[in-house]
Image 1 (cartoon, rainbow, N blue to C red):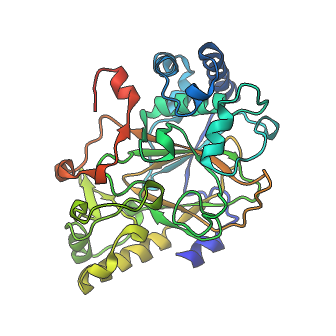
Image 2: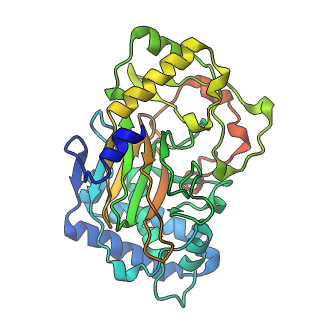
Image 3: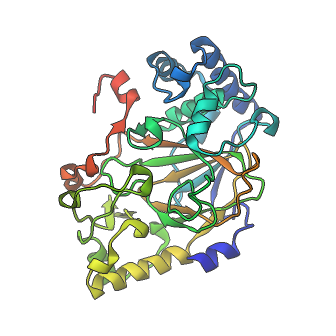
Length: 360
């Protein structure tokens, strides 16, 4: 996929992508409410580390409806076959960010230091308010310490990984947390800093061309998808159920895809041929979005695979910095066969469901 993706590295929001404008007053309303909640709850390491404080979550859950209608409209699920929406923009200045942290742990720690002039705690609250307008934000116990808002930044020693901490290698297109039956329906990426216009790649399965035979082959369970390296590496062999690459939602294709963590060598020639054709098609329809500070990328994780082009980190406090939130849409259902999957023991952190008395 590298050739066509890299050729679009400087492409800024191609016309195929749906765009929604957030009026300036609406954007300031988000920031103002987030700041009010942050001050009311109080900033401390205990609160900012995971963002799971009950008081904080109660404020978000009861007050997100106060945001202007323009915010709620902007945060609805993508409406086109591309399965992706650019939302522009949340008011943000580079001066308020301070240095880009070197890893997610430092980012979480800095967010909880009241004495730090530059803290992203209020920005984390902004991200949760926006995500709550879209659906139910959640996290993973085994990823970034269970934090509800993840920090995506280049990290020393992880440059070549297939994970959000990488940089100098192409991050292959993938379904977020494809290994898990309770993966996000929507993925929200909020850009804080992107001085080199590093592109996020997106490809929709609803724009690919597959033969009936290829579609049939990829719709049958064949291979497992393993958790990515951010969850660790010790996963018992008996917990590797075969899954189908393609699915259906009212007759429209859905996708569950992560070739970097799929043992493709174990498949037969027919399956690999169909899978390779799908990969070629996802490359053909690939679009690259280079987010600017304050912009949000909303991705339909049931339809779209995303990745990132390579870049050279500086590790000088000015590198690319995104916020990521997983979102569940309660009304959306997946294939019943997924209910039997264990998810390799990885558990979700779903406090907004618990608030509403629907424990998971």
